[in-house]
Length: 92
Image (cartoon, rainbow, N blue to C red; front, side, top):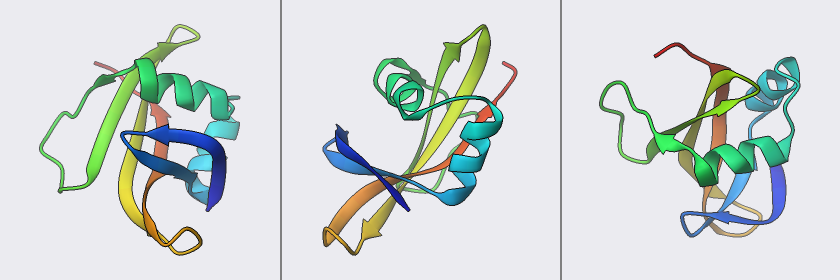
């Protein structure tokens, strides 16, 4: 997983999975766009999720974008972190 240096969200560091990174590239997004959605977006879970999985949504370039993060254990820092697992547009 890729590390976003110096950024904490909800008290934990952020990592990006390879799948989420590919999805970001298809949407022409970068890390700063994801950080914006996590910070400024709203909770947008359509249905109940398992403990440790959260969804944040925001408008980006006239598209509604959903970012899904999951609580994970990061071995390099030996503590829990958020892993960005999914980035995609969605309809309301």
